[in-house]
Length: 155
Image (cartoon, rainbow, N blue to C red):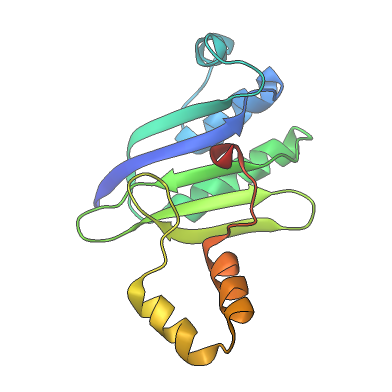
């Protein structure tokens, strides 16, 4: 068993109950009952984000967890924006995977402990060397950080 870290799933609160349950099962690899969904929804409003947390999951599984959630949601006929984050471990950055429907798909980027996308100084230096003009640099930074991805965590 390798290193483990904290993971979090952000879902829109207006999903139907079964989609929430199935996405949570896919994310946690644990059974979820209707009562578990009720507890999750107890204090949620339709315009808020639902947070599903895992305190211990193997490092490096963020993309796999996000893909599992995506599959579960699609099997429920739901195509909605969501995000999965993996906390940093030791000196390494974490991972943020965001899904946006409508052709954008899945985006993966390094993140800090607050689930904020990170552009390292070495990546920025490389961008400055290969790109010319501020508009090109800004477009590349936007693409790398996924700034144009709208997910529940961004609301």
